[in-house]
Length: 275
Image (cartoon, rainbow, N blue to C red):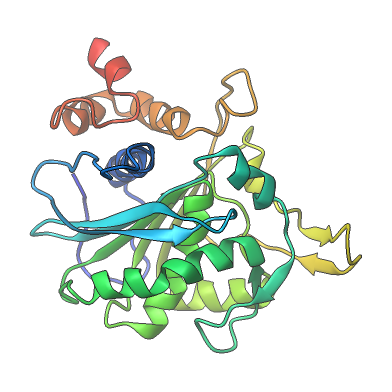
């Protein structure tokens, strides 16, 4: 169900691809919730390359995503916030130098620390992939921030130099210098953003640390895809299943096909199948 996977700089937006990758993002939460064995569902025609962990805010390593591949492409998926601990610290928005790429400006310290803790594992898995196959990078919420940090790193520091990025409900990640380099270096980024979702509005454009009084500037990377849905609550406007359902309403037949196999792997598959 991944469409338009040829190598090119600045791929056109493909809504079928977006729907499929949103479903893949859903499995990063399944992986996290099954901490003991890390089990999750892999879509038909895909194989698991490997899983990785990252050190979250309470300093414990937790499942944070995986890489899967088919004959056509590879997908790197990052998990969003899986616990209240994550959310408390998501908003501690001091910045740090983004050391994975030279002269890449400043990025959110919380997001950057998590990504840095997973970087070696992620690059070890990436080394198993063919550079001739397109690499899609995806994530929801915090996972979208991690996908953004990874995409610049991978574009600059690996043979997989043309990643195709789709994120959902992602926060801002870095300062204007980071965003300028990112927008130049990463050919394709589509950033799905519900206007009623609070998370894409964080950190604010101008953020002052309550502790140090230092001021930080944040911008979004390119590629906004505006969406508009209200689900009656702050979390309802943000959760992945709401994004998936919103996309599925636009293309119900595609959603039904995406969700058909394996059964239950879509974030909102029961709803789709009953329509």
